[in-house]
Length: 381
Picture (tube, rainbow, N blue to C red):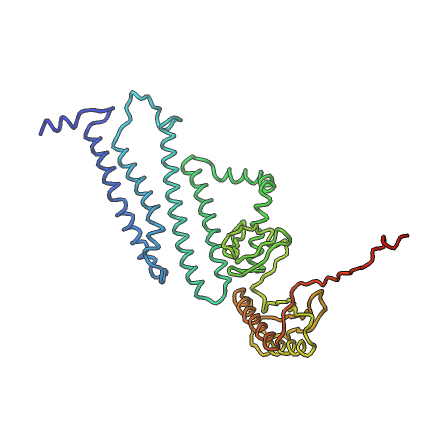
C-alpha cells in the first residue's frame, strides 16, 4: 500500500501522478455523464414551462436545449479537471494578473463561457417564440403569425447585444458605460456607413404597421425584368423572403418592398382571363352567333364566373379567322383554383364549338398564280 501511495506521489511536470489521474477521471466522467446531465436538466426546465408549452412535445425542447447545455457542462468539467493541475515553474509563465499566455487562456475560457450562456439564452427565446407561434396559428388573423417571428428575432438581437457588452465588462474589464457614450459620438458615421441596413430596418417596421402584405400572401414586387412573384414566408429585419412557384426562395430588401410598386395578389377578390377564340373564316353568321350566345349563357350560369358579367362578342376579322373576344372573371384569389376553373371553361368551349359544327381557324394564305401564254419579247418585230 505504501508503494502505491509513493507511486501516486511521484511528480510529472510539477504535478503528482495522483493529480494527473484525478484529472483524467474527471474528464472521462464528464464526457460520460454530460449527455445524461443535459437531458435531465432540459427535462426539468421543460416541466417548469409545461403549463405554457401546450401541445409542444418535450422532444422539441430537448432538441433545442440539449446541445448548448452539454457544451456548458463540458466547459465546467474542463475547469474542474484543469483546476487539479499546476503549471510547472520551469515554464516561466507570468502571473494571471499580467499579460501573457495564462491571461489569454483565462480570458478565452471566460469568453467561451459567456458564448455558451448566450447560446442557451437564444435557444430558450426561440422555444418561447415557438410557443407563441403555435398559439398564433390557432387564431384567424395572420397578423400575429407575422409579429411573433419579428419580435422573437428582435429579442434575440437584444440578448446578443447584452451578452456582448456583458462579456466586455465582466471578462475584459471594459468600462461599458464609457464605451456606449463614445459610440454616441461616432453614431453619425456608423449611421452613414450602415445607411441601407437602417433603411431596411425601418422599412420592416413600416411593413408591420402599414401591412401592405402579411405572411402567407402572394405578391408581385417590382416592375420589368426585376419583377418577382412569390408567397411571403418571412419578414425579417433586412429582407422579406418570397417562395416562387418553382420552389426558389428570393430575399427582397424591405426598402424595395415599400418603395416599388407592389401587387398583393391575395387581396384580389377575383381574377380575370382574356383571350380570343379564333374560328374559321367560312363560319356562317348563324353558327357564329349561336356559339357566342351559348358561351355567354354558360359563363353567366356558373357560380365561379357569374359575379361580374362576362364580355363575349364577335370582335374582329382576322387575317385567317373570325375573332371572338372572351373575357370573364373567376371569383377566387387562389392561383390553382383559378387555373382549374379556366381549364373547365376551355373544355366547355370545345364542346360548344363542336356542338354547332364550328371549326377553329389556323394560319393560312391564299396564293394566286398568273399565267401568260404570250411573252412580251415574242411580240417584238
